[in-house]
Amino acid sequence: MTPVESKVVKPYRVKECQVNLECRLEWYKQAGDHYLVVGRVVAADISDSLYKEELSRAIIDPVYHAGSRKAQYARKGALIPE
Image 1 (cartoon, rainbow, N blue to C red):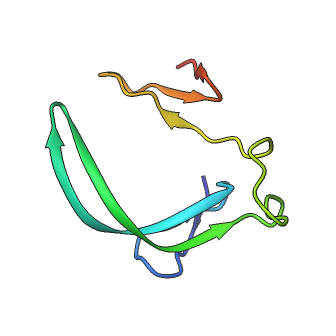
Image 2 (image 1 turned 180 degrees about the vertical axis):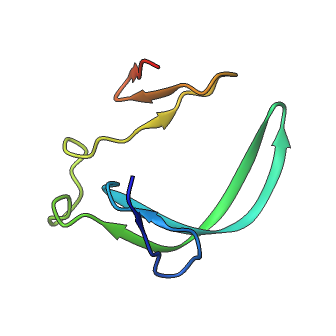
């Protein structure tokens, strides 16, 4: 992953990401063995290849945290193998 300077916040963005959201922490709370973190988006950056008149979910390929004790991630309904 290639770090790129953010526009507003101190942590870097990731060049290879299709969309980068820069956030400031609003609050966090422990929820069992996890934390619920809420932030306010203060800047957003989207790849030119994704932006047309509106975003198309067909071309965006997000990765989600699948929420287990182990770090598992999913993409479009399927777990990503470790």
